[in-house]
Length: 202
Image (cartoon, rainbow, N blue to C red; front, side):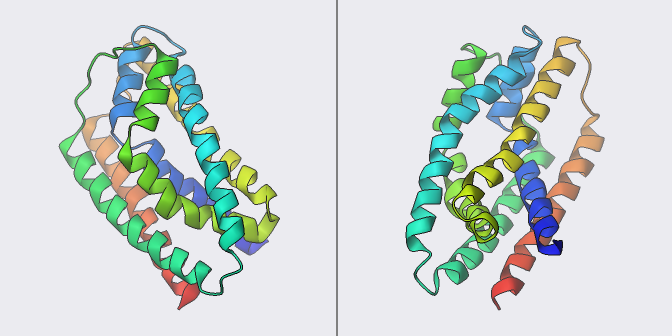
């Protein structure tokens, strides 16, 4: 049970670092939210249309590779290294801020395009994400793919939905300083989980 809660916390923290990070999806949600109160939920649906098939495909790939004895060690090291890299990039991005631009397309298409055309999204799932999927399958076998995805995806809907609703009211989400402190804390926790990934296989 303790291992399950540790895994749950890892998925939440690692996912939060990406979901709540300043980036094209976040900026477009603010811009779209100023016009449509529910734009964030629609963007999250577009995001899911790309993300779910990718996660299922990676999960099936993991299933076929589990028979190799060194697979989990390689994935743990790759996942930890990727976490460190992404955390550093997110911290730099947070400190510099993200410009807000008007969304060119409707929210559904915005979610699809900004997900499917984002190289960092694919790299994240093929490095950090594959480690989370692999760990989930230890607990729940094939069902672990969907269980991990559910633990991850609800954050996209809650966060993007919240951001667009706040934006529709013309309210500032957080002060720049508070947001930076929050994201630094999230990425600090992310680095902690990266270290724990390494200790699991050493």
